[in-house]
Image (cartoon, rainbow, N blue to C red):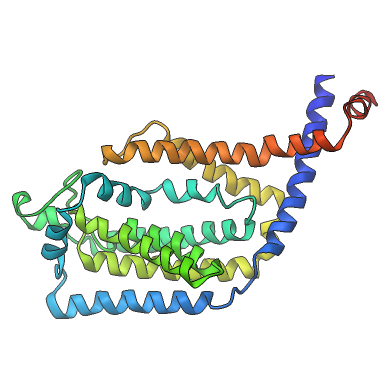
Length: 300
């Protein structure tokens, strides 16, 4: 009886997921109007900003002014913003998109792979000194650990650029795209505000993340069939779920951001559980009379 019930649940959940993925893939255009142009303009603006700072004032240009200006903002604001660009938060956010927009999830994961290669490849190559290795700690505002090396590029900025870049690419309205660009920019600037990166790191980090988002979206369009394959989709969802679980203990370098990350992890997991398990079973139960379901379970 129990084995039959489990088998029935698996069939029902699988059927519901395949239908949802087909609808979700059709919901997202392969080449959204204006998406590529927005990312190109954004990446170019970031590259121009980074090169201008570097050529005009050197690698450390703009740090003192931005870091001092950010001191007037509440510490929790800066820590919340910087936490959004951490390793796990972008993947946890992916759970809110996964079922309804499977192609966006695929693009996000592909962009994350490219963004990680960009960030982790350049950091040891340049091994640039961070503010804590160059300036006395008393001369600037530092929140969190005094990191000393691997400054270029800003990994948080790369992650924010990749996540928000994918969302910009697929967004329908210009106003929404502006909000995502603004959020990624604020996440990047928060790395200067907490005293662990130079503005040049942020500019090139955002540019690399946005470029990764564009490539990820184009690959998702070319490999569009993958977005509708339940096995591939559930693998990506599992990665996002593990990232969300990692947020629950509340660790990390920014204590004021821990409640936010814990709430994000819990909400993402609850949303995924409701979307992938609870609601499909509820819909099935409403569609099939109880007597009919019981007879189906007892049939050999």
